[in-house]
Image (cartoon, rainbow over all chains, first blue to last red; front, side):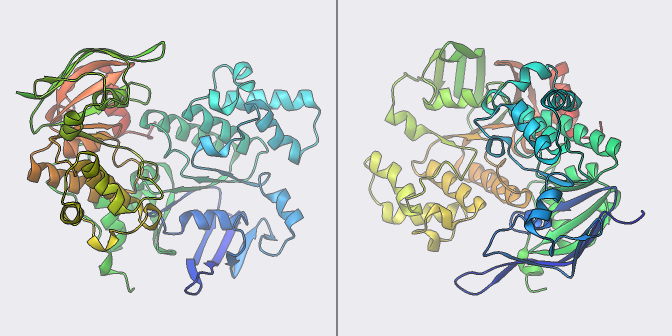
Length: 278
Length: 247
């Protein structure tokens, strides 16, 4: 791996509460090259907060600090908001979990994708339209001309998620953050959507941060995995070596998933008290 | 006698026919899985059985009693439903106590003071949560409340519509264990709607694969485990589930 695209050292996210500040991300460090990095953990483990803090999407009163948060020689924590807007969407973009809530309901699909492009590049309208149609085709939408004119409520979940991916990839960013991109989708559509993400990532030589609670999904899809628990990275391993994971939390998570050829009478449940104080 | 028996069931929403010519027999104490993609009509079947999709033709009967199209209390006491999303299925401004007592009030059954904590205990909820509101509970706890509410009237049949798909894997394991234990202790009959085949494999005895409103195959879970289902579409689903992304 050459010079990493993104370098994160000791990232912390804090929220003030009535009973004092709560740290939801506690000293996360990693670097991302042109690879697929998976971040796994339960809800509340801080995985989404990690993704959002990279894009500076955490609003006050939340506070983000880090020893280093470097992207292409820019320090993301110190640049101005104006500067940040040039990074967000154009250089690093994010696919959210549920297309139903993340697309603008009163704009057509085509306009929305076009907007993502127009904000970052000055292009004649005709050219934008052509780029959008090409992009829709790239995410395997069969009839781009028709879908271009549809509103988000007129497309299915799987198609909505493809639209979102198209929107995020049209400015050709170098990093894509995908926060549970398939958990709102059917198993049968999940595969297709992941395949599209995978192809586009490889073609464009991008870095991917894939956030999910599904260990098996992440291990099959990513190159490297970070397992998060209570705001900390408890384990880092190559995806192919996940079954050799050593941390009791990772092992517990792996064991709690039912298998297709299930013979266990009862599923093992995580005993959190084991490492609560660690 | 069959706990649930469906005969030539057609269900429609307005002019759209969603389920067509469906027939099923489910024995007492059985756990039956209904699987298929979204839009295949599997949830609609459950909605018709509980009376939430009243536009149906054919015959629905529970323990030999045919169901009418009106709201029917004896029927409700026999058969209850648990919904997918514990964030949406509980009233946000009612405490756990109010949620669990309401079925008793409606059916004019007393003793809520004793039965609410008992049921909470049975569903693995600490009775100290009794006067909390849903937003003060975690997703897993909320789903336990929804299951407890469904069991308040001591039904014989529980209809489960994707009961764990909104939950984390670790919490899913807890809820699946709970459902398995409750079924054993109270001799319940389940219909479980899901698109997650491993969940069927853990909980169910038999399953039916649905596609575009029709059942394409009914098989035992052993056939699912040993991958010996016969219909090409069922095999495709199993295939997708095992090699979800190696494509």
